[in-house]
Figure 1 (cartoon, rainbow, N blue to C red):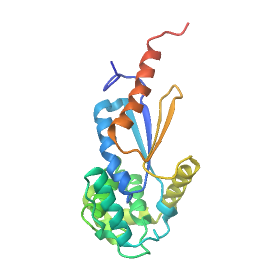
Figure 2: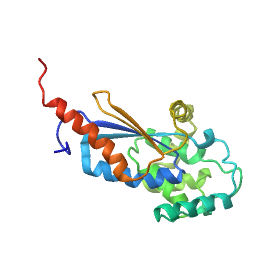
Figure 3: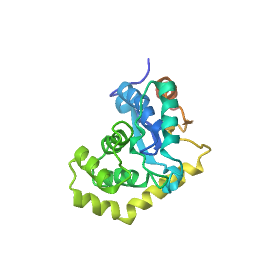
Figure 4: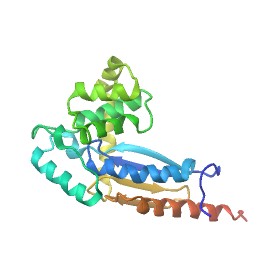
Length: 220
């Protein structure tokens, strides 16, 4: 029997590297939600930003992204909306920064970053613009707009983005989502680009089951 909710054992950690406006990061959220629902407090998730193009303009036009989204729909049956794209100067820096600033203000969990992702990629809202990203974040979190603006402009917010993006760049991966799964025994698995629940579940389940079996033996 696999360890599930409420066991009292130390949890498995999933470090989730993502970009708020990464289509695959949004789609893989379904897998993450399924795993956390199944295993509950046996799993702790820590999301970290891996900025697309290090926050510089994406450098591809809206037509190319529409083609990407069509391909994704063919693979996943998820229809994304490219209407948020405007120009080659579009960047993912603002929504990622707003998500981190909101978390620094106590809006923990996934609420703000997922609200921004869904606003852009499902509703077509142009969250690459500061004012629109603020609208979405305030709607999702109830945070004060001026307080959020102060946190966004705090150099510590950009420092966090740069730090976690550097962490991501140091891994032997090239695409998000990344799930770095580890347990207190030191077992580590690195998944990059995988988005289906059964893949992530298999890794987490083995990490938990290994701990359960170790826990069954007393030290000599």
